[in-house]
Length: 556
Image 1 (cartoon, one colour):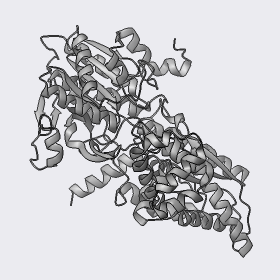
Image 2 (cartoon, helix red, strand yellow; image 1 turned 180 degrees about the vertical axis):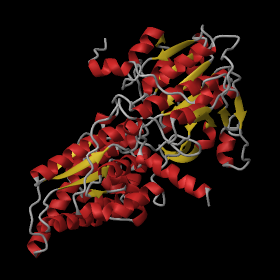
Image 3 (cartoon, helix red, strand yellow; image 1 turned 90 degrees about the vertical axis):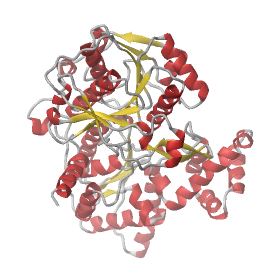
Image 4 (tube, one colour; image 1 turned 120 degrees about the vertical axis):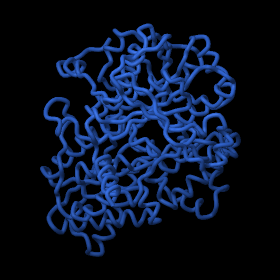
């Protein structure tokens, strides 16, 4: 039962804008294929690696096909705003293709596929969830499709449900698994076609034809609204420093986008920390110096944005985490057999290299415990659970005490920690994400209509009006690289990190000194769904800057 207030009721009637190329029969065009590539990945994906990218070209014909489609759909991983509209776009498209087509939703992510548990999604159900946040229409999950047994079960379910296609809506890991399943199915001669959809608020599933992942726009707008509220409070109370950790497991795209939207005093970009090989002490010194400067000018308040994955990018900490991941992968059974935390910490300390062991023993107890106890499904440290904002507050506070004793800091320091994560994952999608996700779902349906497998739905030209977007598919295998997991190399889609020569980072870098010294905050306000297009349909700064740079380059 979904209870709707006046806003939700009005929002449910929003009609997502669809690119003109998808409004007709949308014949397909195959792009030229570059014959170069990764020979190791090609060897792992011989059936799907050398497929060419495709795009759709609209015309005035009426869509239709001789037989109905039956498409399974999975929501995989953490929620992202717009997931329901992907399913709505998929549903509407296959009904246009053939009125007898159906969508079968697997419950609670890939686990529903493995256990053949799901529901048929009818028009009444779809209509209840249009333009809403969350993944609650069928639920999500983090079960991995990795082993041959998993693939066999998946194909058995697909056969039992008479599926002609399967859509996997997920991030880099989920789409990596979709690519592996598509390769396996094709090698086995199975008729089912598998298509992926790029989802993650982190913004790190992009490149190679994918301009952005869905949910990034909405999440950044939600966080920027909260940051703006906090910064308004900061210049009102004039006595608090706010340390705000932002979701983003590896890449700093969210922190960077929110910095451009709100102009905080300090924003740490993990990729820059790694590139410059900054130590924790150097990061702390930089924050403390800004606090001292502002205090000397009568402003004993400010804001600090911290990416969730920062700790892993500090070289000394990254080396420690890497060693811990390898160590616990190799000695997991012995480690798990120990009964107390002191025993476990001493166990890993004894097996770490001397520098890593020294650093580990000097960490605060809660951080040291988090590094060995909180592991993700791949066996790696869950950096999201490390209270980086509190760690930095403690270290900065200690540094400021030293500076006060030396006479170089004469102000006060009243810090407040915040973590913005789940607040942004299930928000009602912005107009951009509502349109983008609906288009992605529609595109996925057309890829399946064409019997294409091993592709990820791709929509481009995203800074132009939605009617001018282009749509098609990119071979998933072409996005793969080899990465170490559980102590061995496995093929996965490479995460797109912040590039320090990108127009987005350069725009930030050109302004951050001014933002540090002054209080020129921007108060983003809540997401606007109704009103002028320049207010309601604005895309993220990241997309605007990247497209502007590409346009400028094309003119040279």
